[in-house]
Image (cartoon, rainbow, N blue to C red; front, top):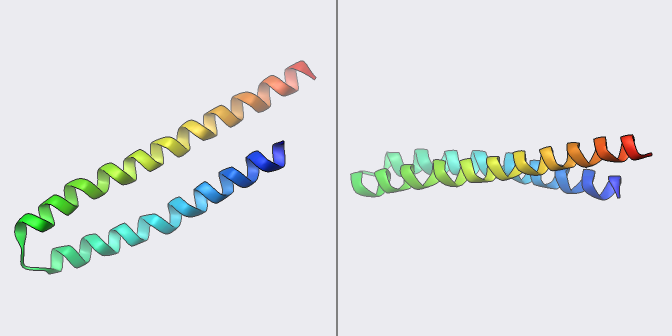
Length: 75
C-alpha cells in the first residue's frame, strides 16, 4: 500500500516536472508570434492550468502524509 502511494506520487511529480517546461516553451513560442491577442489568451490560460496541477499535487501529498501519521499512531 505504501509502495503504491509512493509510486503514484512519484509519477504525478514527474509528470508535473515534464509538463512545466513544455508550457513554458509554448508560452515563449507564442510570445515570438506577432499576434497579440493569441499571446494574451495563451498566457492567461497556461498559468491557471499549471497552478491547478500544482495545487492538486499538494492536496495529494497532504492526504498521503496524514494517512501515514494515522497508520503509525494506530499501529
